[in-house]
Length: 388
Image (cartoon, rainbow, N blue to C red; front, side):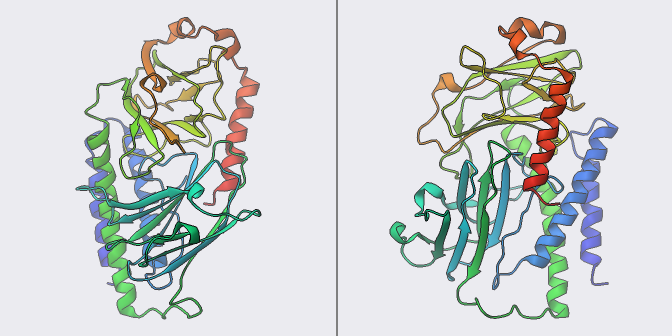
C-alpha cells in the first residue's frame, strides 16, 4: 500500500521509543508515546506542506509536537530554500523581545548538527516605522543596505525564531515567497508525488526520534549531575545567544537552589526538559522562567528553586514528577560574552532546608491564590500566541 513506508516507520519509531536507554518508569514510557504522536503529526504535516517551488513557513515544534528542547518562550518557523533561487520574506515586527533569522545547510541527524550559513537578528534589518520589513535571500552578493542576504552553496532551510519575555507581547507576522514562482500555482500532486511524500515523512520520523535521543548524550548526560556550565556560545550558530546547561537528579525530599545575578540581557530564560529532549509542560505548570517573569531579590540576584514539591515561593520551577532531566539557561541579543560571575550556581539541599538558602525568603513567598494567577497567566499567554 502507498502508506506502507509510513506505517513501517511508525513501528520502527515506536521500538526506538520503547527501548530508549533513559526509560525507568511507566511515566517515562507514556511520555515517550505522547512524544511519538507529536512526531508523527509533525512529520506528516511537514512532508505534505513542504515545497521547494512554493515554500511557506511552518512550525516544526510547539506545545503539541515538541522536539529539540523547545524553548517555552519561542515560536519557531522554518521554510525550505534552494541556493540558486531568490526569496522575499515580508512581515511586521511584533513587540516580542527578539526576532532572529538563520540559514542552515543540511538537517539535524543523530550523527551531526547542520552547518550554519548565516545568522542575524532584526537589528541587522531596516524596519519601517510601522514595523513592516522586507528581506531578500538569494545567490547574489550580500547587501545590508537592501536587506539582501547571500545564500551560500548548500543552503537548504531558513529558520526564524520569535522570542517572548513578557508572554503578553504581540506576535508578529511572517511570509516567504520564491520570486521566480510567485503568481503561479503549485503543481497538482501526482501519485508519485504523494508516494514520495509518505516516504519523506517516514524517513523524517525515524530520524527525528534517533536525533533527539542522541542530543542529551552529546551535550548534557556526561556533565556532573546537579551542576551548570559557565555561559558559552550556543552550538549551532545563533550569534547573539549564550547558554548554560546541566542535568538534575533530585529525590522528592530534595531541591536545587540556583542563584545568578539579574542580567541586562534583553532576554534571559531558564527551563527544564525531559530526557526526551523536550520541554516539560509549561502551560499548566511553571517549568520555565524568564527575566520578565522571575522575581529579583533586593541584592540583585535571582534565586530559583527546582523541586517536585511546592516550596511556596514565586520562583519555584516544577519538575512535575520528574526525578531526572535537563537544565537550560539562554541569554539572547547579547553583543558580548557573559562574564563568569554572570553564570548560575546550583546547590542541592534537603527540601525542608530551602529557606536557609533564600536570604529574602519572606518576600519570596507566594500564596496559593497568587500562584494560581501565575498559572492562569501562562495558560492565557500560550493560548494567545500559539495554535494547536
